[in-house]
Amino acid sequence: MAWPELIGYFDRILAGNRSVAAMTRLAALLTAATVMLPLHFSKVEHRFCLGVLRYLPQFLAFLQAEPTPRQRYPLQQATGEILPAIAAVALASGADGVAIRPWLDRWLRPGPPLPVSGNDLQAALALRPGPTVGALLTELAIAQAEGHILDRDSAIAYSRRWLAPS
Image 1 (cartoon, rainbow, N blue to C red):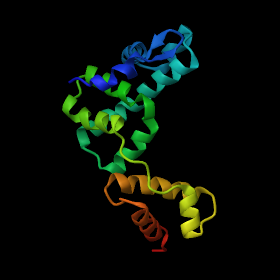
Image 2 (spheres, rainbow, N blue to C red):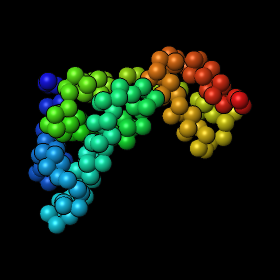
Image 3 (cartoon, one colour):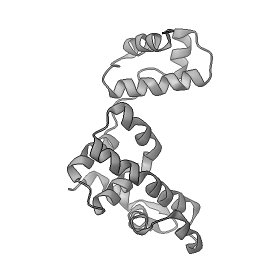
Image 4 (spheres, rainbow, N blue to C red):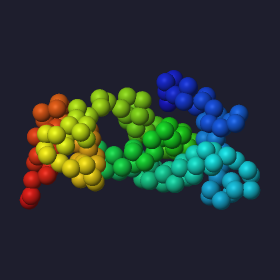
């Protein structure tokens, strides 16, 4: 499996003179983040390896389960920039490249942004700023990934249904 689009990602310098590729190789060798403490890595490098170690088990489990967009969304949001590194460590651990491909394809081509903002939702639905708007934006992102949201009007309609008392 090759993803030439990821060459720039892995060549990128993470901190000091160490690349993302070098830190990914280190993360693959680690069994716990505490092993890094006496090695005097930067906070950025430590956080990077910790993220790979933290999310790798969940990623490997998802590769076996074929999760829905709703199930996948929290992991995709949590992993953000380190997803390709997690995928590389998963491949090195023997994971199926065919199962990894959709994850990397979504990371490389995340799709269109939401057709509405928090301000749009507040204005259209008479909402006050707060956690409800944030939760609604998350729900809209998942609904868009599931194919329920295509444009501003469908996003507002979906939001009305989501906010309606059940």
